[in-house]
Image (cartoon, rainbow, N blue to C red; front, side, top):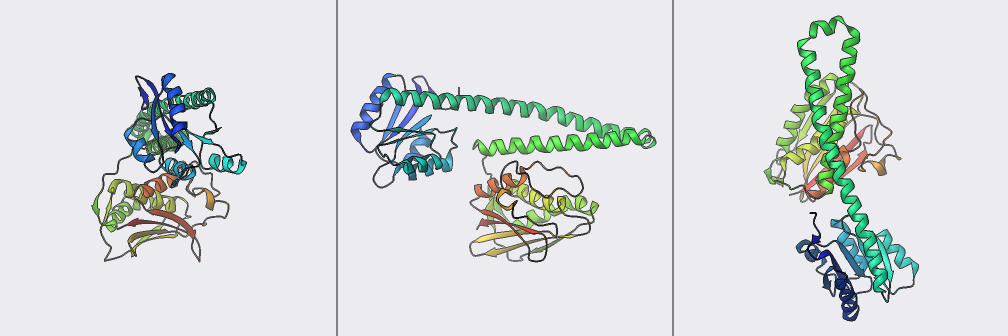
Length: 361
């Protein structure tokens, strides 16, 4: 049974500073079997959502202190449109207010005075849409996990064939070519499935940071050592210029290592042969900053707005037919955001691009 369903039905949160409006609407919806929570302001909305299994929010626009637009922004910072539907209630006749509400992430709106039967119809519609989205997501998760195991099996079988039948393969160029194609194809599929599942975990809010005190320089050196062989195959030099006095930061080492692997791996992937990648660390104010600079083609103006978007289709392509899912940079941004940091990208003055992330000390 998914979150938000109780023995009494779905749970709704009604936020309205007018007591009369709250009483009429909550009385009718309780009669229909909904569990109702009410609040006269939006000041403590996030605490209410955290403590209660709320399925949908009915939110008044005009309220003192914190208006409905501000409350909606707070909700959307934590919950997606499908995970927490929000229906705005308003007596405003100005279409600009309705447009602003929908732009900020409202699912729908109801004009005041609220007709209870209309409210019920709108509520049912969005609860049904939420249920369909949950079922879709569940099926996607099952399918992704089911794909992961056979891909791993295929990769293992391919490695075994390549190791145990070297003589036969070397004597048959066609077989060698087919095995090479199979290896590349399964590698691409494996990377995509892993990145997709990682993004799903982040989106669903199921990721928990296991933070500890760490020197970022140690992680940089570990990741560079891990990727050195890949860079050498393209005769790319990785140079590190790490601050000797870098402050300790409280981070999830595995997650920041994942960010570094993505950024340095991308620099290798999108750089032509015989170039250089420079990785630097330093302290700037209350942040530890890491830069990954390459000498590749740089970032086009068209690509800049899409860089950290999921499944972004960028103009630059891997220079040695490496795998790219379009999820790596999006995952980096989500992980840095979870650390309360920032990540940006810009072109270098000479050539190439610089990807920089900052983590608070």
